Amino acid sequence: MVSALMLSGEYNNSLDSKNRMIIPAKFRGELGYKCMLTKGLDECLVLYPMQTWAAQEEALAKLPMSDRRAREFRRYIYRYAFECEIDKQGRVLIPQRLKELSGIEKDLVTIGIVDRVEIWAKEKLDSIQNGTELAPEELEAFSERYQV
Image (cartoon, rainbow, N blue to C red; front, side):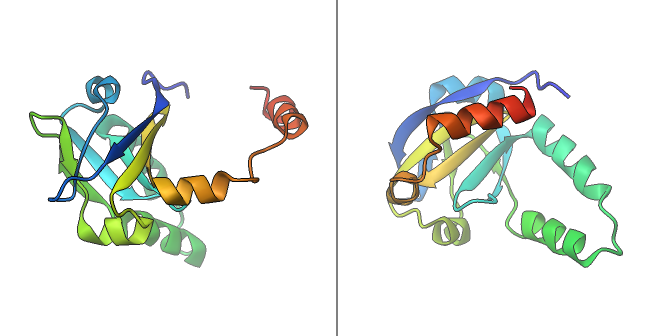
C-alpha cells in the first residue's frame, strides 16, 4: 500500500521546561492536530498521524491472540501509546515515561519517515549512527533486494 503522506527531512529541536517539543512546521500539515505517540522499535519515539495509526491498529488486530510473540508485540505498542494534541503554537507534550524510555533530556532530532515521525534523543542518535551506517555497497544490495 502506498501512503498518501510524505513526511521527510531531519530537524533539530529541544524540549521546553514543560516537556513540550515544537513539531517542525513542515510536519504539522501532515500530522493534523491529533496524533499518536508511542515507543518505537528502535531507541526512539514515533509520532503517528491518526490515519497511519488507524492502519497500524488494523494490522495489529489481525495478529493471532494464540501467538505469545504477537501478544507481546501488541502490548509493546499499546502500552506506551498516548493520544496527543498539537497546540496552536505547534507543540506536543512528551509524557514523562516516554521521555525516560527514549533517553530524551533536552536536545532531540525529529525525522520524517514517509507516514510517521521518529523522535530521537540527539545524543542517542549520534552515538548509534557513529560508525554504524550502512556502507554504499550495503545500501545498494538492500535497494536491489527490495527493489527501492
